[in-house]
Length: 484
Ligand code: BG6
Image (cartoon, rainbow, N blue to C red):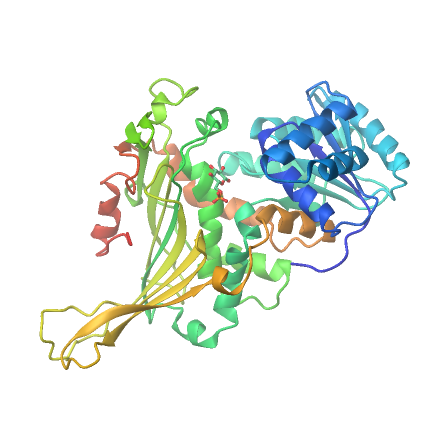
């Protein structure tokens, strides 16, 4: 979001041979270097347990980049050889002494001024030893600026998130901590603020007087895709709801910030999250996908996926309902849901507006006026649809629902990947699109009871929109999930 040209720096990735590095961080680094958006002469230092030489690491990186569509190969290889360096570490706090030596060595090779990003692309269990090791090795303070980047999941519950925040704060200032929620780097998610606060007619309608209810759906068609080791101990609430879905909720429901600045925006998000009561067990329905059949034959259910613990009750779907107790939203139901192996990939926010109190049109056929709806599609097919009622021309007594459509793709080219945006913001020192300590804790507070409640996990067919039991959540409050 910030256009400040980034300083020359060393970008250290701890966990540099992992899946996240290969799929997201490395391709983003390559892109922003390729586009010369990074200060020339900066370097990248990978660290992980694998005993690799610099050139082996560079080759691994080249393969990963080519597999993600980077090219041409010669350019990718020469970039990797010129900027990527490596250090094997054993993962213990003591092992970080060697990393600190290597950091200084690479800084001297590239004549860098000592600005450092410490990017922890690690599983949750490795955060604590990594942070302790970094601090013990003196890496938390460098000659220039030092920024630490922490990937999700940030904790497993409120207590562990607090403990992690305390540990981080004993070595870093909050302003140097960048907690990633990659949804905040998506252009369409950032545009929620513009949509709401740059369009006065919408702001006038964005409240309990006009909005009947709100639905947020983050549906995925894929299953766990080789990430079972992590996912089986996480589940949909920890993996998606506590972070991505709650961030969308906060952006939709927050008040107008006093400035377009990190603290002002993050404080409003915290405020709205604190206006929501902890969820009760009856406000949540969990599901797990069962076996099914796809175009290339039978597909396993979640428990049949390689590596899943036998009889695992990990949820791959969660639906929730809540109310926000503040002046803007009192009484307006919010329905949230997310799941894997659902009908299609679709991230959507739908505001349904109130219907007219009485329909006085003398209609020829039995027709119930549909309430107007604003559907914001965050991905894929990014855009908005405003559904409204219209008189069918030439026919006295007929009304139909039609849509006004806006699609980003019709106006703009392709959009920047979220990780590119986020990494550039880290380099520019702009924390607006990152999650602050208070937000993380406010969010875990909502789900803590539910995580401990031992809720039943209902089976759903792959390709369905979750288990049939999810319908109850909406129906009991007089609504239905939007399925169009
Ligand atoms: C990640 C989750 O944070 O987000 C994954 O761990 C999920 O389980 C992914 O698939 C979805 O991201 P996107 O950008 O594809 O919507």
